[in-house]
Length: 486
Image (cartoon, rainbow, N blue to C red; front, side, top):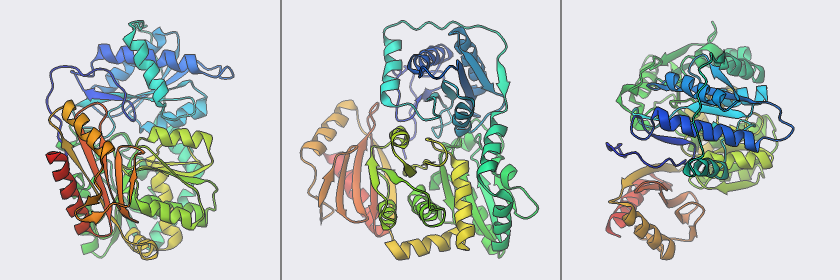
């Protein structure tokens, strides 16, 4: 993984796949954040449907350093734009802001968060009037407002109305699930739930939803720590040793445990099975497709990013569901959810959205649905995934990040891959080249390598899925050498 390098010069204000983020005090300062918030608020108002009479913008924040204080300042700036900010009274998962937008028919939401990025980062996510992540044309318009210099930052220091966004979100989830029945089912299976909130804003939520006398919910890393224990609050295996150890310790005592992990702002999910194995959304999404299509019999297609596992496609097509493959970034999935009937939309990095819920990621909703699937199947997660792999084939997945020398190196490598992509990988013939987002080289079903570049820095991400762990590592090693020698 790439560690953040110290910079003293602010990067230009540019939105990535989901919001504007950067190093606090360098890229993200109060002055810059207020300008971005004003520009975003003005764009939300400008694009509002004539039928939407609201002037409310939801303001939320996570547990990062200065996030609460910056959220209050942003609320005052929104009021200075002659709009009506509604501020959450506590840190909340980002999906709680999307939920509030939909329930209150607001213009949108501004969320002060850097999501899963390193501790020294902060940023802003923008949600549209349907609770969705705004698309690229919206963020380009925000950047244009900033570039022409027409954005002022009027601040009206009037007390801002606050609301309990956390409670409203949890109450909404309670209405969508039979939580007492779910708790009883987990108890009958003897499954203990261990939650790792990674010090993020989803802390305590699962315990509050499931905490009954019939099911045991333990939680680790639930206290606020703006340093996140020294690692990014991202649900990846290298950062989850404590959760894995907790699950294994339960197994050593004869208990069956399930680990659930949320990222810093509670919109990404991963799991740890009863054996202590890390389970990314590459495995969880196929399981959820099976549950939604076979048990709940919900309609709709399956939307995945190009970096998503082939297992997602294989399970979806087994239920005769159309599969739509899109570039990396949940905003593309959200846009498709607004125009199509979607069963589920997901990305490899942990974000999952559901057509029957919100056009946005919600890790708490996904967790409850996962628990429901396990109760219905009568098996813990590892056993259930083994059955899925037996039916559709086993595959393994990994990703490495490489920091290139400079942007010129990035451009040269990108041009090489696009113009003359490799015809073989580690001696294996490439059967198909896909240019949906970067360059994806397919060797076979459940076997591919993908090169994808950051748009704002000299960073290359290399993804691989293969039938064996050895083939994954060998292919990644080959791809890394190819990139470094090109």
